[in-house]
Length: 69
Image 1 (spheres, one colour):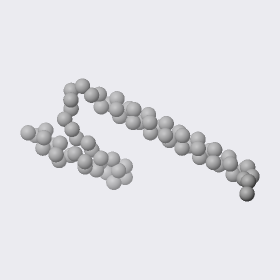
Image 2 (image 1 turned 90 degrees about the vertical axis):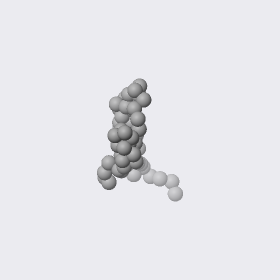
Image 3 (image 1 turned 45 degrees about the horizontal axis):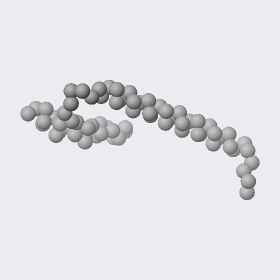
Image 4 (image 1 turned 120 degrees about the vertical axis):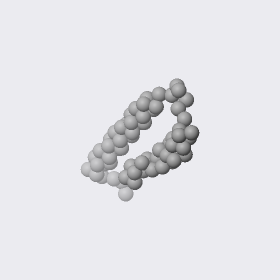
């Protein structure tokens, strides 16, 4: 079928070389809300970015303190 051909053609293909994201083509089960999954991934990405920023700020503040030998 056309759907099977499309899944075979697109499964594990790179979307582009910059983002390094892969397409995971599967049959839809009729239930899963994939937009919700994307929102959760975006939320985790933003939380991780915030943790990295906070850690970087903490590291920068350590420059001013004298470290023990």
